[in-house]
Image (tube, rainbow, N blue to C red; front, side):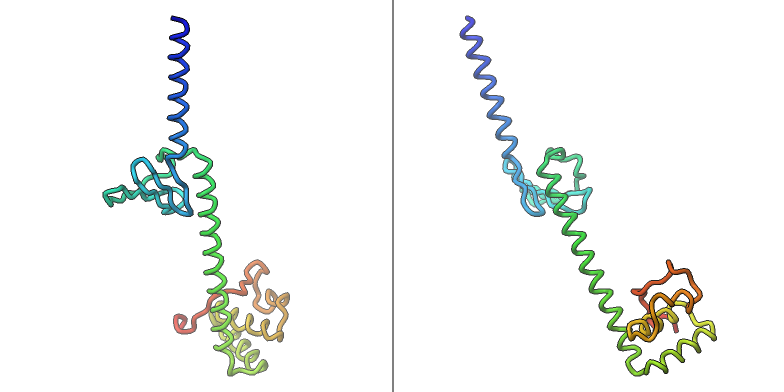
Length: 176
């Protein structure tokens, strides 16, 4: 009887171990998707807090990350870290492109002006009380041309050094 109980307990432990092993392999973590091999559901990263689960029948629904069966797994944490890194890289890339476009637009906007003409234009606008973004735009171009030093901008524009924005976007068409 004792041997029978021990064999029963051993068998139960083996079954539990094999079931827990299957649970570990049930979810396949890919780049931005988690595949449930048991149900066929695919979980796609929508944002850092939400996944979209697409069931085998094609029905999609949003679910919170914390409500998924793999919410506490290390693999999910790694996947979300990679997702956030990619998201940050995309944001940085878009920001770099926008800044480059702002600089190019400014350069083209003032291409017809000589350094002296542009400085005179700034002085006229400042005296007339032109909008700050327009004054800043001209000053940034003068800094790019090395006519004015960036360190002198707060004094020239009568502002705090913290208010200097070398990437400020200015669109003359919206100001008119």
